[in-house]
Image 1 (cartoon, one colour):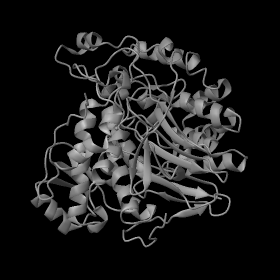
Image 2 (tube, helix red, strand yellow):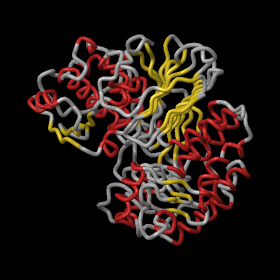
Image 3 (cartoon, helix red, strand yellow):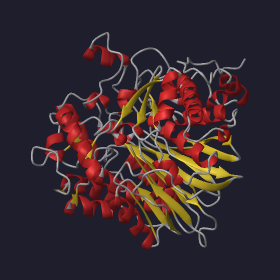
Image 4 (cartoon, helix red, strand yellow):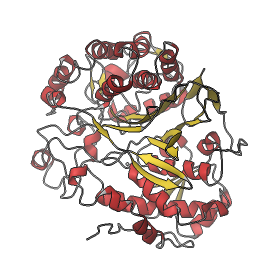
Length: 536
């Protein structure tokens, strides 16, 4: 892939080139991954070490109670891992209706009734057992050290920590773990998380068994029962992540790979399939026609995703039908280049965080994402082992439909890693964090790279838009003013946002420059976070 290395956008970052490389949204996590590579580990070892460190360094986004997904190139083929959690056995529609009233439409946003069984730790173990080189316990050493000794809180993490505090300070265990002075830490202030160090050590020593049915699961069951929750150690003990075959869609001679449902990665594939019907490169990169076209394609994709995507066994439409070329061509015909539209789902039936990536000189590449969902997740933090629990149950519905809650079911998921290949060979592992921004970020950055040849750091730094619902868009303040005026004239309802972190995600990119032993990799890290791409 030949990029233009001129970057037309203001940035604090330059691409990093090395034969072994890790890119994350916190520098200490990138260094944790590099430590494993220095010890003789591979990219999987590096990714796990970085992921464990991120649970400590960026608790606003993830924790020991996260879910996770991964796509990895093992040197010869691609593999997908779905480590998203399942609903507790007690979760039925009747359970929630009794508790929250007959008019409740989904589980609560916070608290234990939003917590499904976390899958990230099981994902670490599964990746290590199948592809890792180093002992599993070695991979958690950096995270344990950071949790015990503490780290100095960086700017973006501190801002989000402080912003979440008013809503969450009274949630079970939150203040004990995350408000050590009865407030959020200040920038540059030392934060120690010794309870999480205890949890990480138990996970390391038992290869996750303490978490799935052992002493950590038992502590969470007890803590949940004290605070109105119904999740049990038995729910944890029955959990297993799932190896899956990534979905794929060709675009401009390359192939984008995404994890299949219950996640929203298919949205990026649908949008690319629609854009493939147009000569995007003929339109100015930051002009209104290119941006309008991408926005409308993304809206069409979300219309289908929000209607059909759920746990695969509950879907009435197959992913293959949703990605059918003829169907996507018919959807593309609905786009009016002069008018924004509020699209409805089509009918494809025939008779959706922290992201990190790592690569090593032997050719292994890992695209990895884990999340507590909304900031700090459920807000519940088991205090003995420092397990900050996600709130993925909020993604279920209590209404009839494919995403209706049921025992043991996985909810609709937003976190999605991405991987790009060409002619069956690896090109790039990448991802963009941030709720429903993720497929939108996958789309916008990839179009910039493949249609406009912008290098990944430039594509990452470029201003973004975020579709919400109807005709509503959030746009970054750096976006071209003439483009914004023209989009508004076409009917887009625009809100200019100054907080880039909150609304527009953040990406990490590693692309393969050639033979990893000779030409190595290039990496980009989004300036919207406190991140770092580092290598040797």
